[in-house]
Image 1 (cartoon, rainbow over the protein chains, first blue to last red):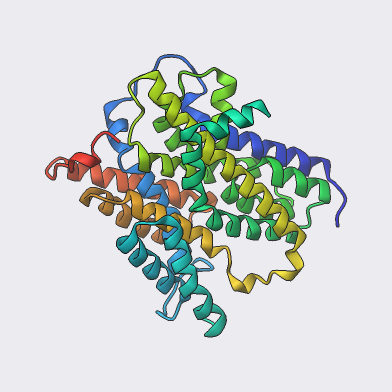
Image 2 (cartoon, helix red, strand yellow):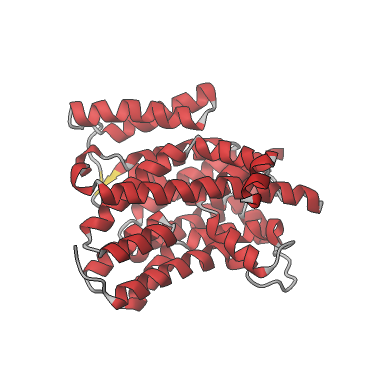
Length: 111
Length: 245
C-alpha cells in the first residue's frame, strides 16, 4: 500500500464535486428559466443516444479497435439479453440471461 | 432513524428501491471491477476509502485513475472527469422541473444521488414531471429510493472489489454485467422509430469517433443523433409516446 498523497486527496475531492455539479448542472440556479423548444425536443432523444454511445463501444470494440470476429462472448450476451427483454420485459432477467450466456462463452471457450 | 422509517413506509420510495434492485447486480459487478482498478492504481488506504465513499461515478473514477497514476496535472484530470460526466449535464436539464420545489442543498444532494440508472428508471415510470407538487414529491421519493440503493450498492461493491482485488481475475470480465444492466434500460427506453434511429446513429458515431480524447465521442454521438432525429421529425412525425419526454 502506498502513502497518502495530498494532491491525490484533493483530486478525489474535486472528482466528488464534479459529480455533484454535472448531475445538478441545470438546477443549481433557481432563477426562472424556460427551456428553449429545440432543447425540449432534443431531450426526447438525448438519453437514448447517450446510453447507446456508452454501451455500443463496450460491446463491439476491444482496446479501441472494432472487433473483427463474431466469436465474441459480448455479442451473444447482448443478443440473449435483448431477446429476454423482448420476451419478458424484466431488467434483472435481461442481466442474468446475458451473463448466463457471457460467462460460459468467455471462461469456457475463451471468446 | 425516524427519517429511515418514514422513507421505508413511503410507497414510492419502496418502488424506487425495487426498480433499482433489478439492475443493482449489474451495478455491483461494475463497482467491484472499479474497486479492483482502484487498488491496481496504487491508491493509499485513505484514498481508496475516500474515493469509494464519495465520488459515486464509475466512468469518471475509471477515467481518472490512469491519469492519477501517470501524474497528470490536476486540471487535466478534472476536465476529463467533467467531459466523461457531460451526459449528466444533459439529464439535469430534464430533471430541473422535478427538482425546483426544493432548496439548493436538497437539489444538489439529489442531483449527486441520481446516476444514469436511477434517472433512466424514473423516465421509464414517468416521462415528465407531474403538474402538481404532490405528484412531484412522489417522483422525488422514487428517485430517493433508487438513489439510496444505488449509492449503497456502489459503495459496498467498491469496498468488496478493494478487499478482494487480488483474487478476482480481470479476465472473467465481470464488469460486463454493468453494460448488460444498461442494455436492459436501453431496451426499456428505446421504443418508437425515431428513438431507434437515435440509438443506431449514436452507437455508430461513438465507435467511429472512439479515438477522440476525453471520451468526447459520447458528446459527439449525442449531438449527431439528436440532430438527425430533429431533422427527421420534420417529415416523420413522432409517435404519441415519444413526444415531449
